[in-house]
Image (cartoon, rainbow over all chains, first blue to last red; front, side):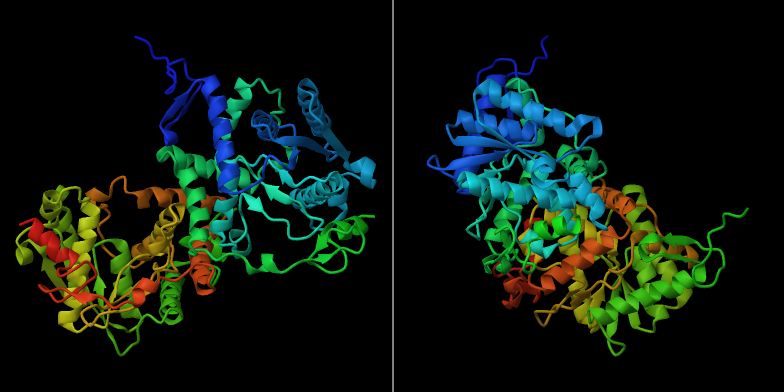
Length: 308
Length: 308
């Protein structure tokens, strides 16, 4: 008696079981299905069109490289951006850059690399260290957003795409919900519009896909990605929240999906208020020209001045 | 070297540590503190006044008996209501009635008892069994609400008080949030106003107290309560949700408190919409005179007709 799991679509040996979709898929059909779900997210949330150039923020991890791979499959005009943050632990930043570069080279794709130390005189870690009370992850997020906006603007890209999957978004949503963080709850979305001429639209085309689906996709497509997590992410609340959600998911398949998509619908229906603040146009930073809501200088330029 | 935990207020041996309040309390101070928190909830949410008569719905469990005990401590005019549901498993309903009666007798309090089988010709369990697809817990909830409203109306009580504690409310909130149940999210509250002449106000004076605080309170006050859970509640999603929340709480003390009270504030601030439907006055049931939103007969009378 055979216990081989069979692909729902063709009967070949399946590589993944997705009880929340009542689907088991072989490698070939998983690749096609992940592309279809990505296309669905692009269409449903109006992320971008085939006339636009997309800058994919790649970290060297499975999600962002798989996203880039899928956008190529779907014939979108995309280039990559790798930001070298200067994280030395086990050569994290160097190893990640190599993985991203190898991925691009093997496929003849264009990868832009920005080395924070080389471009700005110090690494993110140094900047975070000199800033009193600044948690590394929040400083890093700030720096990455600044650089992504700069590179998108200078390269004339219409949108910046990141590899956030459904688990990432559901984890952030759970943390924000446990604290009823109004500002975040009213904004978290697959698309953040460009509300300033120097800002690019931010899009998350993988929001309909689970993390384990992305891992299986990367495996099937033989994407040689970095498995190591960022050493600074250890103990991050988002990792904790993912564990909680996976527990809920295993008790009741589809819970993560329902939680995140139900949230988007609840905001659309008016159950959760949308953020009026997003409609107020930001000012322009006197130093870098990017938007600021915090005075003359944007948060990035203030950080860099402080850390000088 | 002594490892005895000391009361923050008097230095005596403490019986409970409440890290979320940075408090350790001895029995005496726990009793006073629980009463103070109950008074705080009564005042903050405008639950009732000392001129009003309160009907306490007692199940024989720790929360409802402790609530009754606290209301006596605080000099509110309260009487009890025990509803015998006809749950035979290990004599659940009989044992619970005895505990409630003993509690009342020992303190010279008035307990009203309504036996569903005697009053309506069949038990809740029989009614649920005859109703296709009706889950026992939802049928039971419906019957209890009907009877509480009837007894409060006939006895001229201003409000019905139930022993829901913060863990109960946070668990229901988590389930409703995971599904973004708009109708429930816009209504869940420590006070449900009487929106029909035959409805009593529903109030939950223990919403600021954790379940483990109530258990310690019952122990200190030597309340002889029924520990057995209702046999039909096994595997209920609310029990599962409590486990999840306790995990989050142990990781980050105060999370349950913050989650539930943050939710109430979020609704007050308009982040979450309030239910407009509550403003529409209901119709009156042609058979029992209680409100109905579902046609000529209320849900209770339809259930009873169906089960005849």
